[in-house]
Each structure stands twice: as structure tokens, then as C-alpha cells.
Image (tube, rainbow, N blue to C red; front, side, top):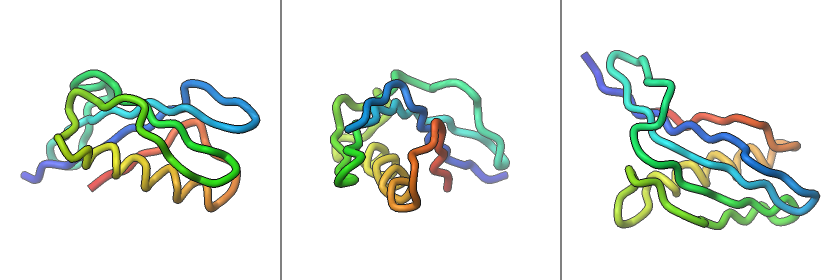
Length: 93
């Protein structure tokens, strides 16, 4: 049985210039992920003009090098390149 890692990314606020997203980790077994956070949510802010993502606060599940936040930020930048930012995203491995 494999263990999957899913980072759920949800928009919490939006203006003309930025969008604020919360991210949390859901760890699943056999490809299934839990629907709720395993710890506190982290917060990322993305500039709609430049695509720059800033870490506002880390999830309690994140590591010292913020590798989970980096994965969530990568997914946000990918979505920004494609057009309007969606309300929800998922990074999974």
C-alpha cells in the first residue's frame, strides 16, 4: 500500500492585485487523501501582476526549509501562468 501526499490550496481572499490562499497537507493511503487539514493551515499570497508568491505563514506540518509551502507556491505559479487563478488547487505526489 502506498502513501500519498496531497497539499490542498484554497483561495481565502482576492483583490484586483493579489490573491491569498491557505494550504494544508492531507496525507492518504492507497491514493486516498483526508479531506481536512492534518495541522494548521499555511498562508500564501500571490501577485496577480507578477506571479510572485510570498509565504505569509507556514503550515504546522511544514518543514524547516518550507518544502510544503514551496510545492504549493509552485502550483500557484503554474496556475497563474495559465490565466485566471482558480478557487482551489491540489498538489499531489
